[in-house]
Amino acid sequence: MRQAYAEGSARVKARIAGGLYVFVILGAVFAPFPVVPSGLMQGDAATTAARIAASKTLYALGGAAELMVYASDVALALVFYDLLKPVSRSMSLLAAFFRLVYAAIAGANVANHFAPLLLMTDSGYATAFSHDQIQALVLAFVRLHTYGFDIALVFFGFHCIAAGYLILKSGFFPRILGVLMALGGSGYIINISASVVPSPIAAVLFPYVLIPAGIAEVSLAFWLLAIGVDVQRWNERAADAAGLGSEGESAKTIR
Image (cartoon, rainbow, N blue to C red; front, side):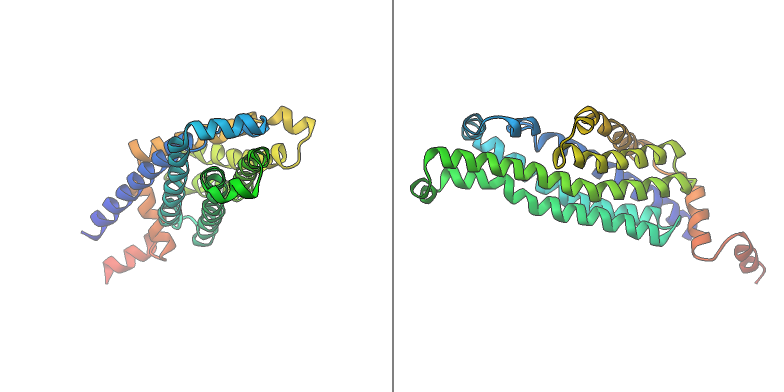
């Protein structure tokens, strides 16, 4: 009965992780792009402010979607820790730590997303600043939001590298998923140079360095949701991690 419970638990955790990952991916697509995609931060202040003012509700929903995504990232970090700890408890804890740090920074950064709404709707700012100054501040906060997210992605990149290593070594996930996750994590880390430290090389690399990350995360999400894990192999790794490998099980049976 204990083995059946363990198998069911591993399957359930994999399905939960897959469902959360699909939600995170869909939410991440919705949140930043409906009103103020990243490219708009390079536009002029008047256009940016006008676009936000024309779609305040959608813009606010984008911020709410971000918060829901980061809350899901917290849950996903914990589920992944539980799924991957049979491979290495310490490395799995490190991967969870990086994802939690990412979620904390990105969640706090949502304040920069909502700041333009506050500037444009609070009458106190209209008397303290000129119209042009408010537009300039709106653009500044849009850019800060993008930079803040890029900084958070550095920690997410380290999470992907650690998780990729664990997936590669696990034996209960396809090795290619681990390779893709590690490559994707490296892309997230390199991505910071494209926005914070602009250079000709960074301009050439972006956004291509993020393609492996997109492929890896979508593939992992749907693998978890549709296939899950190799339960038998997961149980073997969990037993080994608990010090109950084949020899331990044989000794237990003899007693």
